[in-house]
Amino acid sequence: MKGSIPIETQKIFETLTKGHFISGDSENQEIKSLFNVIEEENNYEILLDYFSHIDYQLIKGNSYYYFSKKGTNKQLEDKLKSAYKWIDIIDFFMTFGESVNEYFSVGKMFTTDDIFIQWKVNNALAEKLNNIKLVKNIDKPREKIKKLIDELIKATFVEIFNEFHDKYKVLASFDYLEQLIKTIDITIDDEDTTFE
Image (cartoon, rainbow, N blue to C red):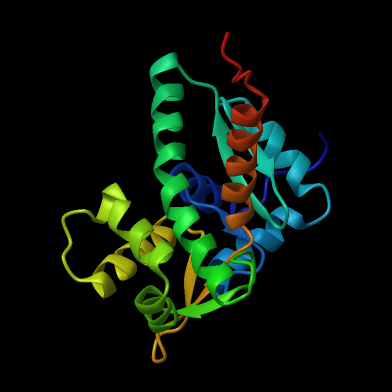
């Protein structure tokens, strides 16, 4: 591939090897800048080739980038466990979206209070929150909700949009989770569940 690697390559590598995503709709100017660098003419192909030599694959999603790495069976097993952790969390947020007649997806804005209010009036949402392993040891529902939001932030699927108003934004990288869930659903749906 002709061309030299961008000067931001080290920062791109550091960000992606932490398991983070680089989303084009991020409010974080550094992340947005890294996204734009990757998007520049030929940079994606140059970086794809460059990272492949150290066994990383730069994957292009729908307005986001992430790393995939070939690994051992143990690493694959760890990835699957991590994926299954997200199923209950995403189900909770999808149920919240349904309760306000909106789809919880890329671009959605919400607050902790929005979810807490729905938790009070929606039994399905309350039950799902109580069943999430990650927050089982937390007593207060608002703190459970905040913990789940923090997990989404930590994984770079959501970011703080307005700290003063406790407002969050679902990023393009959330599409990764949606696709993951669809893949798992398809696999489960395709299994033969008939009994003889």
